Length: 425
Image 1 (cartoon, helix red, strand yellow):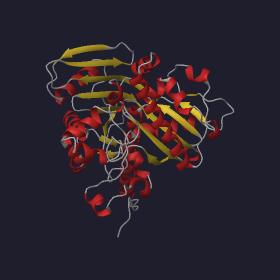
Image 2 (cartoon, helix red, strand yellow; image 1 turned 45 degrees about the vertical axis):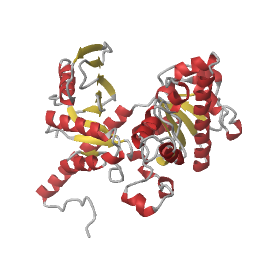
Image 3 (spheres, helix red, strand yellow; image 1 turned 90 degrees about the vertical axis):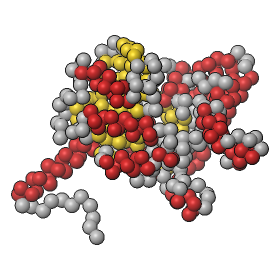
Image 4 (cartoon, helix red, strand yellow; image 1 turned 90 degrees about the horizontal axis):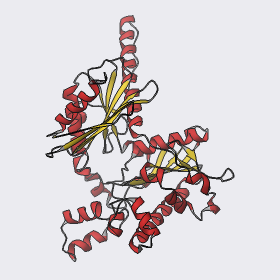
């Protein structure tokens, strides 16, 4: 195994690949980029080296293999190529790990088959993740490839929180339960919030609000997720950019039976033409707030609906946790929209929740507390770094396995019994 300290993180979408190269000695981001419009006549690669001198390449990328080869060439031009001995592992974001994958996992043929078996519960994401894995394995077949699952952090939810109240046999047969998503973000941010408070994560209860175009909330107690807003799919929960969030399941039956919409049309409606876009035609929170300030009624309704749902989850998770040490906002909207943070926490002083207007208005990329010193519950803004979290988990796993192999080899050479890695029946 390589003694390198670098991890390449890949997030493969259906027509895109995001990447970051991270040095685990200090967490430095050595390079990052995005290849988009894969399979279209004109694609685009945007690459940013550690110097920050971003540049673009416009050309056709017929498939993910061509895209990743172009990424490898960009990295090699800076002496950071995939053949570098400094590269310890490639970490892959995989959206759905089901109930089997609750930890970062070295990818084998068997693991890949299981990820493929989960496609029915993640049809938009797992196929693209699989493609990225397969291409990366051909480029560096000798290097550990590690899958880090969006659902893994939420696997600690108690059964009563993860179960839907439907026939248990039917649910078990079709793997219907609440899995949750954005797990790497919720894990990273909850731990970073504890550091910001100067406390051990095991002692802290946090409500994490990951607010981007996709949005989710989680209740984290002592470093473990006990509830989260997304469910079997990323559709459940908060009002999002284009997703409805929580909705009466009877709406689906009504639209099908009375409205004449097909199941695929309803799927498209709820995932791509609902949420903020469905209410006002926009899914950019900046544009929605601008329109609302100018008196646009539809934009005002969209903003109010978004905030109302958010406040319901804050209150609900406060009750679930019993004691809340911090509420933390993260991701694009959470980190940048002061008006959203102010509206979501307004009037909650009796719960110990309050935002200082001056602190809330400050724009910075650093983690910060925006509540007054006397507030019982800290309100914080913590930028998320899902790529760094994936890199940390991948790096820790491959080095732990390397140490175990070395210890096992040393035990065999000395004639001492090797440590058992599991129980025997």
